[in-house]
Image (cartoon, rainbow, N blue to C red; front, side, top):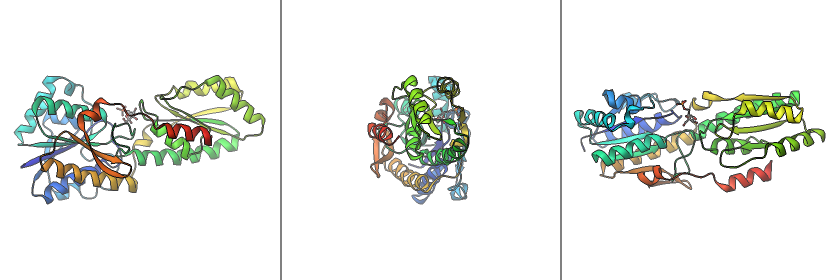
Length: 319
Ligand code: F6P
């Protein structure tokens, strides 16, 4: 291979920079040219492609976001869009591609691999931690720590006022962020899309616990579980307890990556580049029980990751 390219796609996540940096520096170390594609598949279609050197990725490892920029592209979902994108890669003599992104972005890579036979290696980059085959995705740890910090603060004010606070966290259709931060933050209730919940029962229990003297309660709500604002109104009506809602929003997607995100992103970034250079294709590099694993790209995009039932059980026991 003479040149490879790296891009970030979909929602940004802290540690994407560390991963891209590792890909770039590994390729250069191996004597191979590296290009950066700006703004995901949108940039690939436009030909927004730039040669990178070692300096291009300095002063980045500590930064959230992605220096390459990212986007969600409707045009890439069409065969014409993908053809344009592929033509631009050929124009730069790019022989292989590392895609850092969530399942939608990896699905785009699978389509390119099938249609054009271009070697593709993926890195799971999303705060949602919802990519099949890996128990780790780049950015989820940082996002979880940001959420946890917010929950700690919300506990102070909830306790001061004897309120219920419902905090909505991201995750799209996955409850991993809510479940993990709910357990770590000591939430009384954790509502996730994967598990049915009984609103009446929850409100009844909340009322009873207040009557027994409880000062406050925290409900962590995954955005995919229900509308947190609406939930807050119903909970207040049904319990008669002052209830507030805090929607964390994009705060949880930014910020300097944690040690875990920097280390793991660097480790799988190097592996992805080395794999691509040695002729490997259609793999996603992730972690399973602390060890780096290579997952088949098509398996990763065709299977749905489920929420660990052990976490669901633990949340019930500890609430
Ligand atoms: O996939 C990451 C994520 O932050 C989800 O948790 C959220 O639902 C979504 O992206 C928001 O996407 P956008 O930034 O495109 O609105």
